[in-house]
Length: 242
Length: 79
Image (cartoon, rainbow over the protein chains, first blue to last red):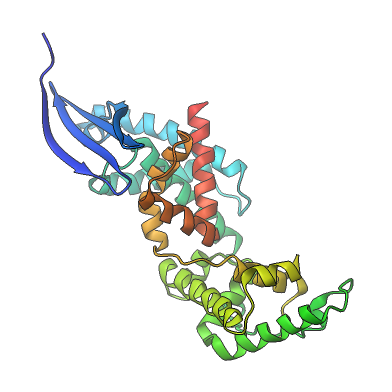
């Protein structure tokens, strides 16, 4: 007897993936069909019952949490190996992540596998904690320092050859920083140049990551446009500084 | 009062010359990064809407570091 497939939800995601959720007996089955070169094919059939299990009664739920904990622990330890930062515990990260996941099950949209979604939360939590640990002693005075002064000649460095075009670009850079960037933009750029992540700068200054990222990006755009307005393309500058 | 070091100035020039338009925020990126990572692992070209994620990763060191960590984690699970 063929299992009954009953489609109850259909959508097209931003990526061009078609996701169809079906019921097969009592199981929830996700079919993810990826559109490649104009042809729709079934790329993966994911019998992903994580949500259902994590919302179930005690025994089923505890077993699912235990399995997810092991998966996340393996992933977080791998992510640690390639990221330098403050020393933190993988077990603590996974515990924090599990709490976040259980609180936000409703926001899982099925754009990726459930375990991938869970791992994005785990890795962001891990790296965020490493950043906070590493920069916990950064003072507000460091963050409020928006001084981006430099002398164009000394910026050439001890081994720098006297290159008139390079000096000219550095003088322009100094002028554009002074005249075209706001105080906030200089402060955020200054922190970035001192290796302070946007996320840490945002937390310590009472802002948020999106806003600080935009502040820095807008400053970069302003500086690039300022150079373009006086006839210097990115390629021109690159050729002088490489 | 501090002044920028030679290295910082070169980093700044690097940031200026590599600046490209970016239409999304870090939170937008986070919302789609899992899907983007699965495309990468499957060696599929991302769709046009996913390319904005790649552009953001090229502009945002924080998101890029998290994306690399995610790939490392997912590679580990595939092993």
